[in-house]
Length: 515
Image (cartoon, rainbow, N blue to C red; front, side, top):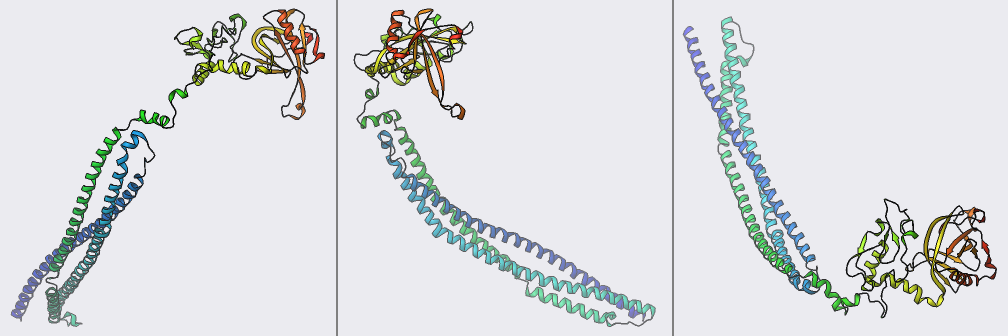
């Protein structure tokens, strides 16, 4: 019995060595399968993404070509209304746009009808091939893994049977289950080993075949990509070459445009010359200087700026406008202009007020004098008397000492209009002589007072229709005879308007400030 037990132990040990070697082989085989499956998985992912990217590339370039063709079609209709050198220079622009539009349309047609279906077909083939390869590979690996697990379990069961058999022999006890029989567990282990050998035999060439199939699929995909990108690159190169040629020609066209000539040509084609646009004063009329017209206001006659009414003093000096003769502050007469030769001031720029400067810029040389002559000459048949009077201002019934020259016009309709200057278009204020009272002033033989009532409407209910009194203190700089002539004309419209001399004391009433 001892020799039998020793031989049995040696046989079991040899069997263990065989099973250990087989297990190491299976582990190496499984590691190789895992690497092959990982490589297949990575390459199939790359192939699938590459096929999708190629399809998207062709599709989007087709959309870009179609969009560009439509834009070029719209560009071909631009600049059609230009004339002169611009029209001559851009004649080739429309034809160049149409030529490029045709090229882009053909390019889009090639991409959409040829390259896009080809890439779509390649994408479908790659997708189908990838699914087949990965499905077969998963089946192979799964079958072999299952067979190896069965063999490992059989080997472990055999080891347990041997251990239990030895334990029963030492303890001289009987086994309770057939699983403790080393012979039966050995048969099961041999059956599992044969099953694994059968699976390996069936799938011995499957992984190699899958690798070859994937290589064929990927190679075909790359050939389609190479062909498609080559066609795109050649067509795109031709387009860019033509576009560069057109750009160089267009740059030469643009240089032939002469803006100055084209801007003036439209007048010539309409039968208008530049001289027709120049202001020409009526024949025999020349603009006269302010001093010649008798409106040069003395410095001591004003205390405030004619434009902004700011008071003169040490920090604000008086300046005459060399055109209208009125007195302004430095701010309101900071512009200079060359006056007409009739002023006798040469070609040197002279100080003028803001109003005269604007009129000179807008109306040329005859602007302001022309406006004054319209008032006094074109409508002269409506005037009874006109001239310059000095208007005194009063505050709280007392003379304030401020005087302003006013150009006064008495019309045949019975109205007295007061202008700040002979050149103003509209009067500063007006008096209805039919209802006004014209009075002499007891302490000044050359002055007269005009008192009138005016109805104002402010929009407020309790003020609506309320009459307000206005008083004007005017003085003739030419003497009492001129004053009497003015009064005779003004009182002729209302015999009852003539009145005794008006007192200048505060109790006689309050003269209002200039309207």
